[in-house]
Length: 201
Image (cartoon, rainbow, N blue to C red; front, side, top):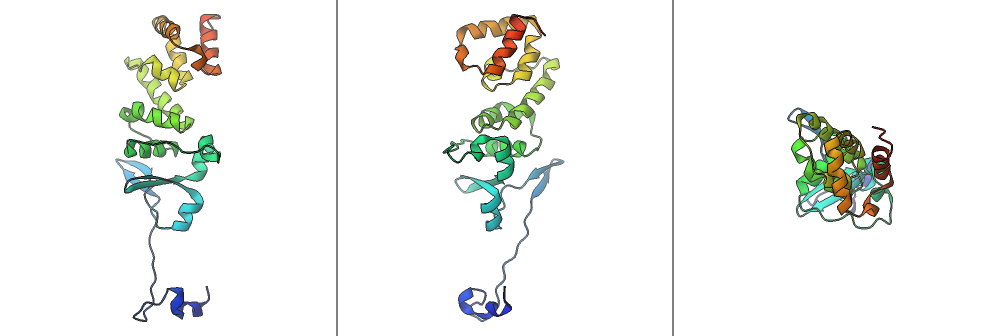
């Protein structure tokens, strides 16, 4: 900018009292909470950066601005211009937790069952894989989640662990008898074929 432009009133730098007005601020990209660094999604000071590199989610007076490139990389919903409305989220805090996880931040295990449906709706399969890994860690302690959840969110690695147990195999077979097999994706069906027909694991 030419310095002479600063003293032209119509450019907005000079106030009515003939003083120079300069706005400045500090953008904080990350905040440490309970020893874990988390992204600061609630800073919109730099409007240009927000518009160019961020996707904004509004919920009343609250909002978050997530990194556009990260979301596009992990979900076609954000890269497809024809995907339409992303949906409504009843719990904004859980949406923020899902976004934190999508950006690589650890989340509390207790929030996983509530975050899974959000991640599934947004097709953030990196979040689902993270949740699946954390749930597998709980299996040796006897903590299991409903098979309906395993199949709905396509947690194939978790399914593989369940199918290793004869008891789980019977439970899954009983559940499959009651559901529409067309709802299962191809990879999940391969798991069942490998187990029930060929006993590969």
